[in-house]
Length: 200
Image (tube, rainbow, N blue to C red; front, side, top):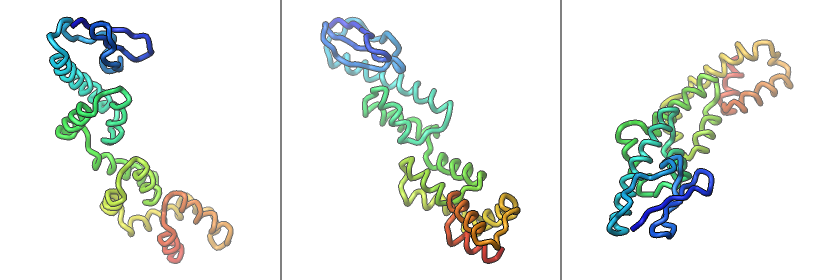
């Protein structure tokens, strides 16, 4: 069996076996030349060797991505899939990264929640972001419950009224409606907002 390579498309390397196209792979993962034996006895041995190499290269690529920023499992899976990595190898890489703690959806989501709370965003806005990222409704509810209780939300609203909106005349109906609308956009519930306004 003779192996040859061609890179006619950008970022894609074609692998030929005995002159026939065998696989197309990403140069971001494998580079422009793949280190496989030129002479393999059969296609089964070639598949086995390629599978080992694919895992090593995909694992290295995943670690490089994770060293730059934290990823959700679904995002890393998508990133590897766009690089034409096989499903079996993706599952193996993700399993390995999760086992070593490089990939932790729960910790990632907690970080996002804390980041949004620091910006004084409300739970509804945070929930929309997490749901859009593919987390389940139950996961999001539990995480938000753990990170921000009702009293904390009302304290945040109260602090915003004392700082950001201190110059607004909240006795004026229109001004009051504008502030309520701004707080709703920040992701606070109407129930919490009205509760704080009654006390304020």
